[in-house]
Image (cartoon, rainbow, N blue to C red; front, side, top):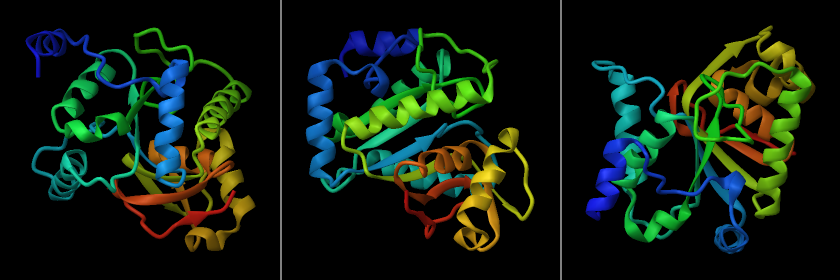
Length: 231
């Protein structure tokens, strides 16, 4: 790593990976060709370092596997989109991930800034952390813009992990009732009667409107590796 890059990271200003929502024409072309090589399949990691629970064995296993994922030199590693809260955390995670990703795989990494404590993408990200203060209609519009951008790159299948994933049994009303409605519309057998919640669960259910979605084992505190929804 160059001295300049190290200095940028120290200042919290390093931008090592592109924002998927603001790609240049050249970046979009390269991303489309990359995603096509992997059959339209990508991995999404939501807020990878949202909680850092020292001494928690389950969390230690999660971070160990996450570190191995970032450090993998396998040419078979699929492209990865990392959702991270805006502002300092966004820049910090970019720098942290940059130290682990092998040079040959750095072209496969993209970021999406989100609002504070939320997986909702910040479409108009300006470099600062913001809180979500709009309506459900606005929320749906933002997710639709993200899905449109992802579709435009040829994304078809999504493996979702990160933090936080909660799995709830039965009648769960969160996110203004949206999760419960989506859960019921797909039928209780899709998760053996369970409903997904929190940032990873919300992301999975939203994206399942458009893509084939699978829950990754690289998730915390819950993990699900066998769930697959068809659009």
